Structures are given as C-alpha cells and as structure tokens.
Length: 249
Ligand code: IPE
Ligand code: IPE
Ligand code: MG
Image (cartoon, rainbow, N blue to C red; front, side, top):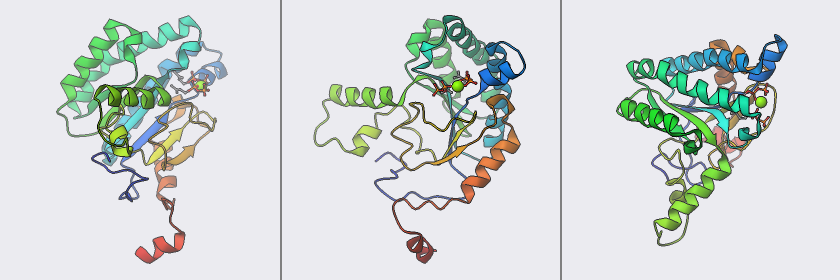
C-alpha cells in the first residue's frame, strides 16, 4: 500500500471534492484546424487552459492535479510538431515556474524525460527542487509518459532493489513514478475521444471518468466546475452494492 492506501486494497476515504484530478488535455490540433491555424497555435492556446485548471484546482483546495502533456506514443507525430512541443515545454517552464512557486505549488514531472535532452532535464530538476517544500497543490506534468512504461520501470526497480518476499500491490506502487500521490479520484479527457491512451493504467483502477467534447484550449473554470459537479453525483462503490453504501451512511 502507498501512504494513501489503494482502491483495491482498502476502501478509500472519499468526498464530493476530488483530491486528485488527472486530465488528458486533448483537442489542441482540432481547435487550431477549426480556425485554419497551424496545430502549433492550438498547443499554445492550450496553455491558457492549463493556467485556468491549475488556478481552479488550487483555489478549490484540490491536493493533486496531473496533466498528460506528451505520451510515449506522441513521438510518432511529425518531427516539427515534436520539436515545437519540446520548445514550448521549455519556454513554459522558464516563464511559469516562479509564479507556481509564489503560489505554493509543488511541481513534479513524470515520464522518461531524458529523451527531451539535457536542457529540459536540467530545468525540470531545478523546478522540482525549487518547489519541493511547497504545501499547496501538487502539479504533476506527464511528459514522455506511458502507463505501461511506468509499470515496467517499477518492476525493473523492484528487481534491482532485490525485493524480498512477494511482490504485492504496495511493493509495486511504491516504485511507480507517482508514488507520492493518491490514486486519481477524477479523470477528465477533453476533445471527445473516450480512451485512456496509455495514461495512468495502474492508478485509474477505480477512478471516475468524465469525457467532454470541449477541445482543450476551450476548457475553462466552468468546465472544471462541471466535471467536479458530475463527480460529486457519482456513487463510488469500490465493488460493494448501493444498498451497502446507504446502510453505512
Ligand atoms: C493534445 O492535443 C496535445 C498533445 C497530444 C500534445 P492534440 O494535439 O492531440 O489535438 P488533436 O487530438 O489532434 O485535436
Ligand atoms: C493523448 O492524446 C496524449 C496527450 C494528451 C498528451 P493523443 O491525442 O495523443 O491521443 P490518441 O493518440 O488520439 O489516443
Ligand atoms: Mg489528440
């Protein structure tokens, strides 16, 4: 078990406000094409939505926000788009990290970021170190991240640590790249697709899903509020019956 418990191991404490929101920010390209703009313009516009959800989550007292920025499969895109996204990541780090720090945000990145080169790695490590002691929202960006990669690297770390005894959930979860966070309560995917695209495969076991057709650059605080309201109406049974839940109220 991680410090937060596991949805399949113990019954998690839940409330109407999700403690961890994980988002697949999808639809930047279509947002741009709809305006006859290059895809890059959509990625740039998506930054406005990132700012809005970071602010919205921090203000609501949500503990963890995780954003999927670049998947391990996104290398299959044209080289100029991959290059643009890498440069955008770098320039955004340079521009936004101080503000995040002033707002007490703890910043983390998960994924095999060596692939983006030394400049990105150095800036990420510096931003993580600068914000490590912050006690507000933990903002995690998943970059060159894949859920299968994450499970495999955890198994590899267990092997290298010469783990004694059975490999149970707790042992594996302790080596996942987001071991510092509880499992997401609410998963949001914008852009109309209803799939996980190799995001947090292990941790989404009991997460509530919210799919919206809104394209990521158009996602704003009202969209976040709608997702949270939809979450608050869900009955999280974790395998139990509805009657059991009503009896325990
Ligand atoms: C999401 O938007 C951003 C990344 C994957 C980096 P897309 O670029 O996938 O936008 P669509 O799906 O083509 O509209
Ligand atoms: C998923 O979006 C990854 C990110 C948002 C970073 P994609 O747009 O790449 O997903 P697929 O390929 O359509 O499933
Ligand atoms: Mg997409």
